[in-house]
Length: 87
Image 1: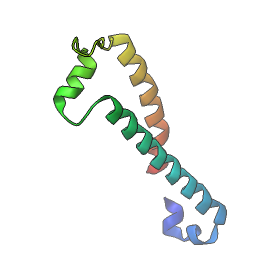
Image 2 (image 1 turned 60 degrees about the vertical axis):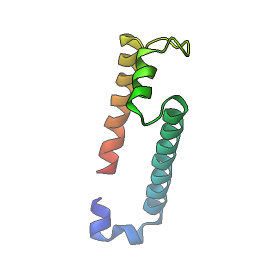
Image 3 (image 1 turned 45 degrees about the horizontal axis):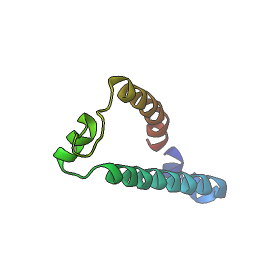
Image 4 (image 1 turned 135 degrees about the vertical axis):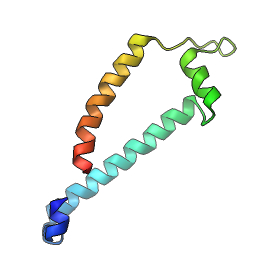
């Protein structure tokens, strides 16, 4: 964010385009994340528990430890790339 403080922001058109496209990318990431979440669960804790532990009424199986570990592995990698770009 040094370029915002030093004033390079207003002189560099390419930098403005890159930051705008990155902001759109992050916005789309949040939108798709919310859509995926609310497609499977609600904000109620019971729906989250039912999703991860499975529900015999809805014929859903519980999530396995290996499946959760694989998802966590990718998300930790993605956060490692996303967070330094924001700060």
